[in-house]
Structures are given as structure tokens and as C-alpha cells.
Length: 65
Image (cartoon, rainbow, N blue to C red; front, side, top):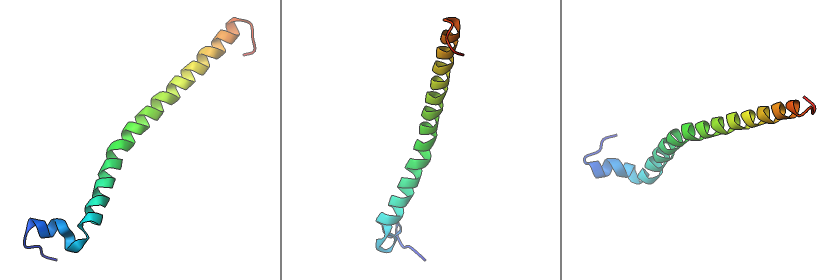
């Protein structure tokens, strides 16, 4: 397929909105997913640390281990 101008290339034969929309969605997800993974990882580590602190406090108070 040949394009004679940049506007023809961007239009993609009338399907440019779908093509560029798909690329945009892909790029957005590729950029957002690592940020979400980092947030979930930090939240999980914080929950584990909180649980361990609670268990340690219970042991120190003579409760169940």
C-alpha cells in the first residue's frame, strides 16, 4: 500500500481512527501497567508488614502466635 501524503497515511484508507486508537490504547496500557503493578506490590508488602507487626504484638502480649 502506498500513501502519497502524511494525511493519507494517518487516515489509513478511512480506518485511521481504529488503527491509531488501537495503538494509543496499547501505549497507554503499556505505560500504566507497570505503575499499577508497583502500586499493588507496595500495598501487598505493607499488608504483610502490618500482619507481621500484629502477630508480633500478639506474641508479646501473650496471645496466640
